[in-house]
Figure: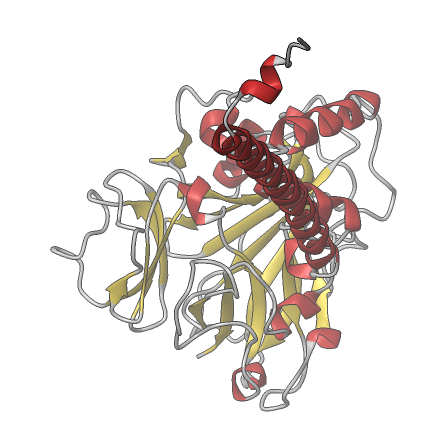
Length: 404
């Protein structure tokens, strides 16, 4: 008698069940594999698409490398971007000593016939942070549109940034609030979604009296503060007590101070805009004690982790003049020092890093509509042109100063 195998002795129903289970498992495995492949393709397709979008969008930076860095930080590659920037800075550190180009300070102030009244007194020559001044260092020059009576609205001066890095300079703009009024403009991305009365670009009619435009502060997620405009606080951006605040009033005056001490909705009337950014760096006419040059947790994540990067700041003097300072190679302490030397009683840091620090003045007949082509940058080293304020896609908020 021939014995049958164990397989042949199993019931037909059992063999069919096992075959069906194996088919289901194979089908499921194929579905999982196909799903995984599709996820990978979608993931990398998304990364590739967003990268192309970032590289083609100037609001993420003026250079391709800056746009790529913004993309990396926004897509989980922050440590890689930081490492690459650290290597770049390590190979190109801020140099000590030396002298700036011979024409860095201009040719000296020209004659200006200024009416005796209707304006603040012109500022005195600016003391150099580097010590004994070089020829024309700290000498003020009239910039931008003047009033119909010929009153200068803005004076600009150039000084070296500090006693050690003597080949680098900072630009200083002194603005007269008795003949100028301030306005805060939102960008396409900052402070966030929403329709604002004043938003990029500067409108046609507003350009007829425009005198200056300059950068505001950090991205809101880094500013450690709030944003108020159009009669309300922007969602999620509540005013922080103690924060450095640039405050614009109904009459167009701009003030700088500490929220809760110098300004508040409860005790300050006529506030129309508030832009907070970090903490004060000058208070009571002195550099705030304890400023740490290397502390990026407070004063901003810099390119390459170095303390000396493009920085900007704004302050107010005792008689109400508004002072803007910017340089291509400044630490938080050198920025504060220049603001204090310029007479600021209170001052705050604005934006930092290459693509975001920009101050422009505009000169044209009053009533003549203008574009970015009429602008002049405070420093020739400033990246980008004044045209950024005249395009709807510009991402970051900014301030303007216009004739009253």
